[in-house]
Amino acid sequence: MNAIYHILCTPLHFLFISRFLEYSRSNSSSASKQESKKGSASALGMEHVTRSDCPEWTPQDIENMENFQWNLAICGCITATWGILANAVSGHIFINKSASSTFNSLLILLTIADSLFLILSIISFCRRTFAVGFVLDQILVMIYPFVHPCRGISFTCSTYATVAMALERYLGTHYPLEHSTERNKRKWPVIAVVMAVGVNLPKFFELELREMEGGYQVVPTDLRSDEAYLYYVAWFRSVVSTVGPFLILSFMNIKIYLFLKSYSRDTGICRSSQNTRGHESRTMLLLGIVLLFLMCNALTPVLNMYELSAMHKWKSCQAMGIFGVPLWASMCANLSEYMLVVNSSANFFIYTCFNRTFRNSVTKICSKMTRDQSSV
Image (cartoon, rainbow, N blue to C red):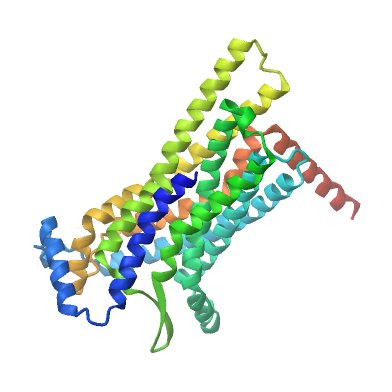
């Protein structure tokens, strides 16, 4: 896992430091930057963009986009609120579980990361869509440069916690003696958190506050506007946040399932034994989480690759005073963000469907609440 961390974070830190030094040099002229951008565009063969190539939004398109964002924001806030409550119940059950294990510790981390992501998503929806009063609007604007990276960290931490569960189950089934130590219970969650912070560290330098007429506004920094950095973000985050984790999860789940099936057949242990049922329950739980992850994150790598291919065209259109991004791409980007909220809110149903112990605990909580209300 340490090797994986260095592989992921070393190029990220290298790029960030190099860009930081580039923008810190006082003797770098704007003319040389323009020549560099022209050379990059020429090398990519994308230097001829005319006004007719740029999609322009009609007033009806703008109205449709505003209505779409408004409806998604309402659905997102409702879904996120439900998810926070459901994750609170899940966290309560996992924390009070008698049998503490590495798998259980990672489930707690997953629940905390999902809850944090949902809280920050509500803040993001309110800032961009709802007018909640000038003072509160300004507060949301002022904290957003910190909300943006923390939201990325919480989402990536949720993803890596899921990957860590798959790796833990794989090592636990294939190498039980080497893996069954108390130290592992603390090691895996810490590694997932450290890697999530490392991957999203440059996000703290992507946005800044700028005082304008009518109050503060959030604007992108020079780093976030740099074309090379945007190419890097599109490739790197697609690999480490969606495509890479899904491939690892799929591979590990298949290996675990085949191992358990072979082990049960070769050793003659019946499926009703407690040990076998426990392994199968955790494997099915992981499978459900993987399928949910795939469905809710399918749009993200596609949009990232599309952004990568159309990035120069968009920048050329914006230089001519045209937004340049097609309406469908903007709508898909908003829909993709909402699906991430669904992903962090729906794990409760996965736990309920695939884990009998969790299901029994939820039933006890509901029964206790019903008795308390009846007594009142």
